[in-house]
Length: 283
Ligand code: NAP
Image (cartoon, rainbow, N blue to C red):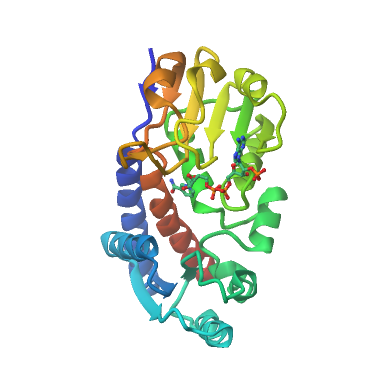
């Protein structure tokens, strides 16, 4: 018998807690918590993500400052804005919505975000701190996965965890978080030989591949925990994950669905990181 991990419910509960923490912060310091969101260009998906982030800020009481820049914005103009935001004491987080237009070097721009305001957790210092098990702002999606596992009290100690995908924003930090939680971690990618064997050995599978229904029932052992990070379109244009949910679920002890799984956790963890950044700056 499997249990569906309800990311929507977990995210809603977490947001209530963040809202209360934000309210306490304001009472204790007399200050607002601020998040800058920078969007360059008119990518439709990015516009939706930015809108949702601003909405989430409103929900938890964080003050958002949106900066909409035209797609012709130059590297220097973007760099100048980020450098200015970096110095603004009213801002505790800076988020530059990716992808940036092709003529902009994302790495160069993102490097200008100070580690303490890097609420996406993408900077080299924050990733380094994560590896050293130190004080870090952790990338929102993998951190959201950890909160889901924690919420369900899934014990990771000594378990075999397989992360499928090794991107800098999901797969790699995910692997590090599982390792820090004392899992034995295998990271698979497009060059992995015998992916199925690795997956069949897993107590926990985190799929972050970007391919619809990529993880099939024959790749999953009985009783495994399966977390689906993927956000893809199925043959009917509907949102679906990397896991063939309908067939895989019967083999699982826990499984997260798409939609309603990891997705709602990501923006919630952005709110969490912004609050953490503010409370660190106040101490
Ligand atoms: P990405 O940068 O494209 O990385 C995909 C990873 O999958 C790569 O490491 C790639 O291996 C690996 N891969 C591709 N084909 C494979 C195969 N046949 N076998 C094994 N591994 C394979 O993607 P991402 O940014 O990590 O995102 C992954 C998925 O998560 C996407 O669907 C994305 O939309 C979704 N996502 C969701 C959220 C959320 O909030 N729910 C947030 C972020 C991302 P190589 O490294 O060898 O190329």
